[in-house]
Length: 372
Ligand code: UD1
Image 1 (tube, helix red, strand yellow):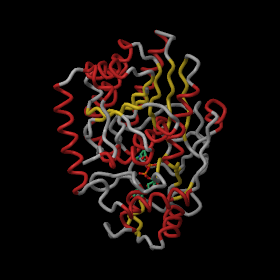
Image 2 (cartoon, protein in one colour):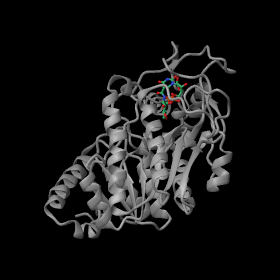
Image 3 (cartoon, protein in one colour):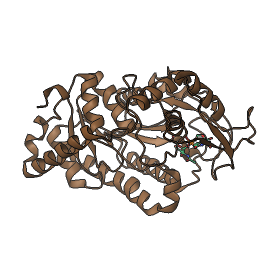
């Protein structure tokens, strides 16, 4: 039984599928601050299996402890956190509270429940401005913004935790740029408001929700002048979590990159998206975005050695899957069906609060075909 924090989010919902498809049981928790429970309903219909959902916040140590015990959790995959770089500059303390304090409370509950296997969602942003490329796990950690520093501090904290108690098995996964969606088109990234990241913005231009993309700088020292990133398909990223879980058989702390090892420029992404969507994404070039680097991509060698994992999906597939999700769900999870789901979730929460933790493990989100 795996506890997945941030389970209803973009990455969480894809990790849920990887776990359920591998025959593992899942209890997903989420405070739904940037996600929608409809994603988990869809996960269940994709997998034909059910999972347990608890509306809970990682900062609530008591609630987490109860869930760990009541569900018989054996390992935790911790994805919950705030993740927008710009926002983290504006309200850093909110990031420290959610990410750092939240992880402290989660770890504390795990210690109490004697669950000592943890996979943590970190970010390649912990490397800061690349001193060399490709970025391997030995690259110095020099994050340049509050969001990146929360990930860095958590990594350090987890290393200290292991030093104090070598019973722990800890996997730290440093994500590069996750994009794409499940091939069914049923789940995907559903940004609130104006998307911060490239692919969701491109997809919204392609579908006509936004007029044009602004390319932040075309004077970088790259072949076409635009920034180069290591885009990784979210389904590959999700399978990396399963590999990490399987390889945490030995005690210790393992930090691993999840990237493809390939870099693609902003213009290459636009061209790939045009090709799969049959549309022409309009764009204009503007100033560089503060804090952006010209090029970064992963050295994925250690991931292969340590986890037996490597990414499999091409940029074309990332764009095609992202486009399918956008086309099938122009307004993301928002809509009448979703409102009904949220009402059900609130009812379920009221009911849960009134019930004892022992009956929790029996409760499941109803699958779509089981619903009245
Ligand atoms: C960003 C975060 C990073 C985080 C990652 C998650 C910043 C500075 N970094 O990385 O910490 O881990 O998301 O995926 O926010 N671009 C445009 N126009 C747009 C959007 C993006 O030209 O409207 C360009 C950017 O300048 C960059 C590339 O597209 O060259 C990718 O941008 P983005 O998707 O925001 O990812 P990162 O900046 O790499």
